[in-house]
Length: 116
Image (cartoon, rainbow, N blue to C red; front, side):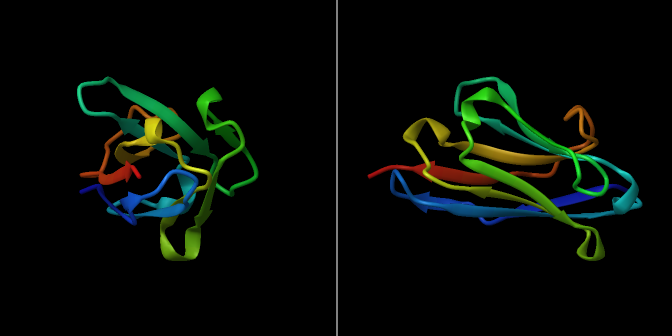
């Protein structure tokens, strides 16, 4: 079955960086677009970014403001989210999802906390 495992979250100060990873299995990773979503405590799930099957097309939510970069390595069945210049409002659980729409199966998430 589809399995997605996120990692790379943690506690970082404002202005810092983190690189999230998500390894997919149970499906042909290289033929599926992927997405990152996030959910702050008490908030709703929101889409962050998507990437197509070969990484040629990427899309970002407006709040990313050129701070995040999505990428993928199909040889390793992995999608990444490089997050730079993090802000306290980026604090959330981050999930990767199968499919670029963000509505497919998700992993268990990795917590990102931005605090001084």
